[in-house]
Image (cartoon, rainbow, N blue to C red; front, side):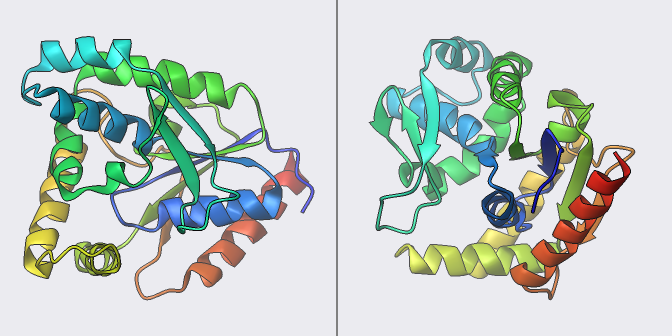
Length: 232
């Protein structure tokens, strides 16, 4: 599909399907796919590895500013990755998905200093154009003038089920109820934080993925992209 959209912003809660949808959409359009959540996960992983208490806002913020964080394509890899995340030159793609990172990333991502640093980096990616950018506050804070904003949702139970299935595939033995509780906890943290709370932009199109296939949702969004492109 040919489109003159410079950027598509996709936001939504954890495990709503936004990353998979964003990746497939980027592939269809020939755009760069950027899942901004990996940046906050990278900071969280770095803090855990350094033995820094994630509740220590000053220490975590100082650490974030010192990190080299980058992302490249997942092409050429055979382990199922969709992109390759780099932290200080180290491939940490799968390390970012560890349960301990899951439990602490909402705390780290809520720190204003960390978000300010990451948002600056995200805007640099956005300036390249032809980007599908996925996160929690892309349409409200990072690129508020994005020509198309989507907000992807699903019920907490559906999202917990998806995360539980992912954990099983990765060899973890997490309990579904524990994952559901963590999903609900993260929703509360992300939605009530003072700085950049997770919420749909006023002009975002909200799409519920509960009980729907990824293919159905992507087809719906491609139709939206066509309509938006036609009217620009």
